[in-house]
Amino acid sequence: MRILSAHLLLLVLSMPLISCASQTLEEKEKTHPAVKVKIKQATHDGCSFLYSPVNFCDEKHIEAVTTAIKSKKPNFNSRYILLTITERSEYFQKSIVAIDPSTGLFYPLPIDAYSGTPSKSDPDGKNGKISFDLDSNEICIEGDILVYRSITTGNFCFYLKDEKFIGHTTAYMN
Image (cartoon, rainbow, N blue to C red; front, side, top):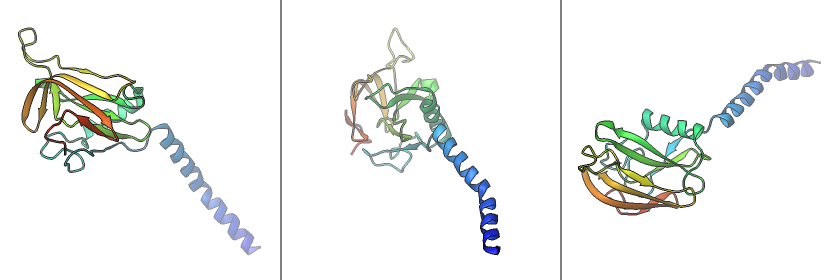
């Protein structure tokens, strides 16, 4: 009888734990595993390209990626969400990340930011353009890109392949 009582007591005491564990699992399935930046194509410190002022692990970037996973559908390369994140609003600069919503991993384009090129019709350079497609792994930028304290103007195309960006070579790429 004592053994049976001990087993019943153990079962009763573990019920709240089982209940909590199932709630945690359900919450995890509803929300998402933690988002995490993944940089493969460049020298980095885990959160930034080496010498870059952009920290992809800060609250602003993690919150933007988390919100995109919850509210957006894939729009790039069949399964990714391509997202622009404002870096320096006074210069109209934005970074670009490709998010895998099934894993929470996101891959930054190997630039600090892009923006428009100042011109007579756009003196502030507000109108940088990116083009991409759900059915393609190509991202093209028309305008200025900022990489390692240097701004370059033109048309730049990158391709997401094997969890890294290739194509136009920047100082952040190996």
